[in-house]
Image (cartoon, rainbow, N blue to C red; front, side, top):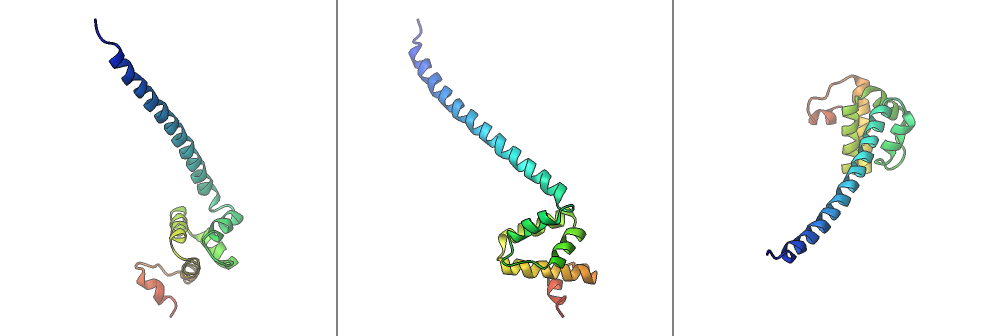
Length: 125
């Protein structure tokens, strides 16, 4: 005869581990689903809704952004550039981000392609 009690204790521990893992994966699924929906909204709305862009940019800028700058960024930047600008705004100070947006807007208006970050500061001259 085999001793079944040793195997049963291990099954109880495994059952609890798998139950915790199941709840963890379900939670990760819903968080990923929410993230996917948000990404689809940003892809669809970035060039269609000035109010959406104003909301996204205002989260990163202290004070009010110039309406011309908002319109220029919305109309002339591709999604990849817009999302880069959004992530940049999350990681720099609000006033510095406002300056960056204004410089990008000036560069777009002057129709200058910026090949290096040093050229951004030459735009002021």
